Image (cartoon, rainbow, N blue to C red; front, side, top):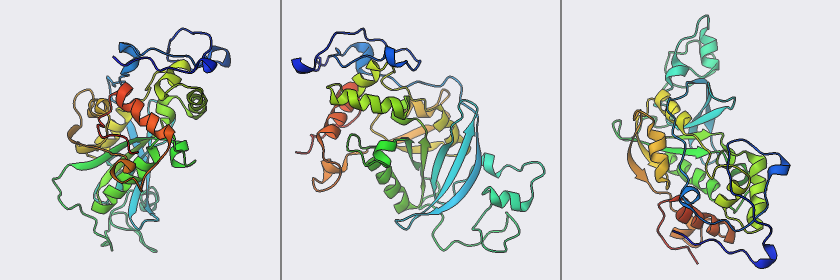
Length: 313
């Protein structure tokens, strides 16, 4: 069992009870940073497992040429469990959405093309969603029967947009895109689960608690949130819709494997592909900060992530 994290005496405040109900607290319910002992319950948080998969539907798909020269097909999903617009970033036009391609009553060919339910490529004057046009890029994967490379990625505004060096989320998203772009095959399921499910506002509070001495797990618990409140049932359902049920999963989190496979093994993870921080492989690359070092250490020691290489100095 890990030892409690020491906080300098000047930063210690009155002890509070450690509880983490599922609701979001008011300001009066939010605690202040104190040393929190690691227990069996708080030291290794488990991800929520869906008993029944949610229902998902792809509303629209569009081709996105990217700044690095690859093309992606961005799929936007609705579902029956929340009002968020979750995404699938698809590399290669050989990966299709069943719900998107399904005919809808009363729609025209223009309707189908407008929502992205077409084959081949769009071009000025095209009349049918079913006529194919050869792509100028290779659209088929190297091996049709090979498991698809998949990354289940949770939204991180700070790491992906605000250049945060507190986490490696932006780096992981970029690296997943690079690997899939090289093969022109793969899926990034992008879930709107900011801050491991607590939302951006609470995440920013957690950052302030971290500056006061808490780690990323402690901060969530002190705000009365679970250490990891994400639910990956949506990812499983989206992968089913894309007919990707044999996958290579880019992750360091062993709990995510069971969560993504689903309650009835709807998806099979045939291989886990590690995501080693770039700075650990090459000291001239990646993110270098005390904050990200502490973040990664907490993931290893408190959340069971499978990273064993020493921290880069």
